[in-house]
Length: 108
View 1 (cartoon, rainbow, N blue to C red):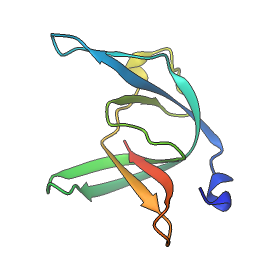
View 2 (view 1 turned 135 degrees about the vertical axis):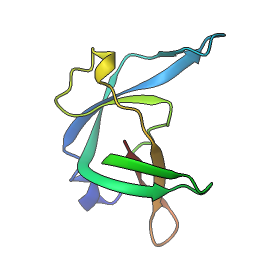
View 3 (view 1 turned 120 degrees about the horizontal axis):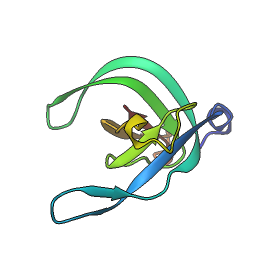
View 4 (view 1 turned 60 degrees about the vertical axis):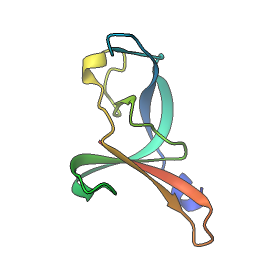
């Protein structure tokens, strides 16, 4: 990640990755873990590669990918309360001019 962009990751979010899905289709999750991020409150409309339209309210920039089956707690939100978690709606990888992976942008 570009050092200038890394210096902007000043907010702490918590993420909980999906651990398993039972026979009924219910998910269980790992314990929430802290991660540095840049959180931008930004309403946006994104068209996925399959043509579906996704409306988002928050963009999160991180060094590591946040999967679509992950729970996300924004800064200041109680990560012990699962009902306050947000679910990613779209994720993309950003690359440098040379094609190297630079950062991830996840939309909620």
